[in-house]
Image 1 (cartoon, one colour):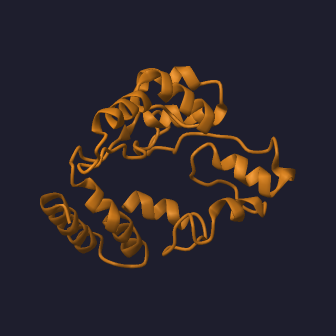
Image 2 (cartoon, one colour):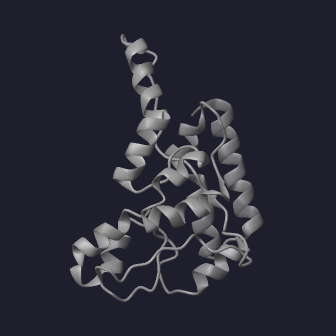
Length: 191
């Protein structure tokens, strides 16, 4: 968080908001933002809102503490689930299996400008400059814990609460302890 605070201090954006309030692509489309963190497809939204920026947007992985390694990033995406109450679990399993498989991961990644679910497939979509930069960053990526209760953590989003608390003046250790308690309870209870 010390490094994150230093990065945040380089700009003058809100410390208690997120990418949706206001929509970061709309802010960038105003033409007064030097850089922002987003998935590659966000550039299309920026140029749609401001066609004058077409061809003026470049991509790079989130910088690390040293020039030789990109910053650690979250690697993950949508959860593909099969409800326990589904009367068509076999068919649902086949859909999930197909969507998570190599063929559809490559096709979806190309269509949506993101990195597929396996590093070995990243080269398949490297033609897009945004996706190529994202793939470099994903090499230093980390996923959420493999837990059936992770959705309970996401529902509250204690990591964002932790970051916001620290950026707005809270003691980092105390804020981290609080976030850890919330995450632990959610992972242990599923609520």
